[in-house]
Image (cartoon, rainbow, N blue to C red; front, side):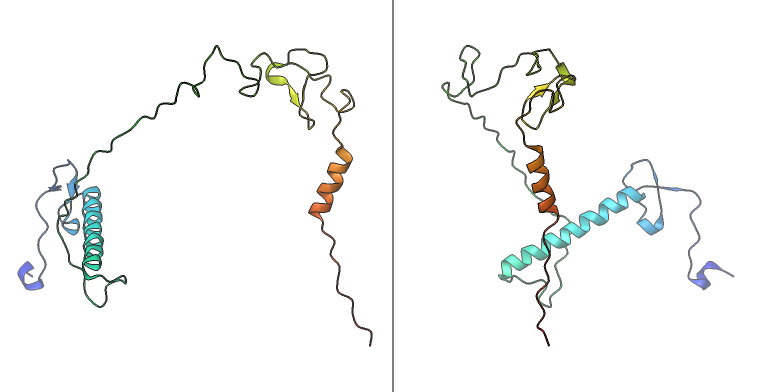
Length: 174
């Protein structure tokens, strides 16, 4: 049987390089492009269709989709991109932080972390209590540093919040 009789074409004699000259092999199914270039081409084509249909909707003044019309297919869309200017905003000198000026509410003391009870340096191994103080390993428990935090009330409130009272409506007696 001859290829002309069946309507099929004979496969080419060697591998076909991508038409975009990217170095990969293309195929007839992907318009002689490699898979990556083909995906990029299809994506650009879809974006062009969307841009054309949205431009058509704006020109016609309609807010709905196609209105029974087919979108105009544009092969190439030229978009001009303007560079974005960056503006630096400088702070006034009165609000800029300075090293010579010390304010009590600006930042806390940056000295070494110390235990509130024994003043021992704790570094990164300090323990924060619920009362808001920092303690060493010896004074981390509430009974060792006379903690003013009321754990019992806090636990009762947490349980009450997690388990609301569920009460059924009273039934009418028959």
